[in-house]
Image: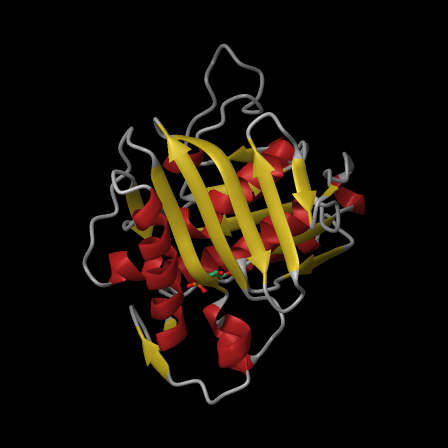
Length: 263
Ligand code: LIP
């Protein structure tokens, strides 16, 4: 459906701001996914980006829940910039059981199931294992909220990370694809302020099963644990930092502005 829509004119609508874009295809893809799953699993719950935008609750319960981003990278989709994905994470008792990210234009299907590994088009993937931040490629996204405080923090973070120096910073424009790029070792870390659960639920399973680490820097490290490596709280996350050098990034990212719309 997404690939077909890319061949036609794309009508753009706006959500929270003039740069928060949505299209009819976002809505149609979400409806298609939810209705086909609901037919098979009528008791399951859903958190979908476009349903929430239309007023549906965004609340996670213990019930089996599908967390859906029908088009992650809508701005890319509108511009035909080739990182556009469908992201689905499935939780039971608030724990992610499996995740799927389909990068439509690249035709890459990332899949992961708890304890069973991560795959791209069926081939096992793993994180890079890079432990030296100065040899790293780091991903980030600029997000939609551009108030003065957030803007300043975002720019300071980029300046700080570039000054380490790292090999580079990239911003592909789809949170789910970014997570999969870390999962398959094409990038070493990804950080994001104000990410939403539907942007990351599918990718979280993929990263974790590929040997990566996800953390919320707004959650203080427990005193009895030397690191957050085992403190995996996917649904509480509103910000992610991945990979083995998360401690370094934690020191670099100077402040944190939570998103208010996530469960
Ligand atoms: C978007 C992400 C993008 C990020 C935005 C937003 P959408 O998702 O993919 O990388 O910068 O904050 O979360 O709105 O295209 O599904």
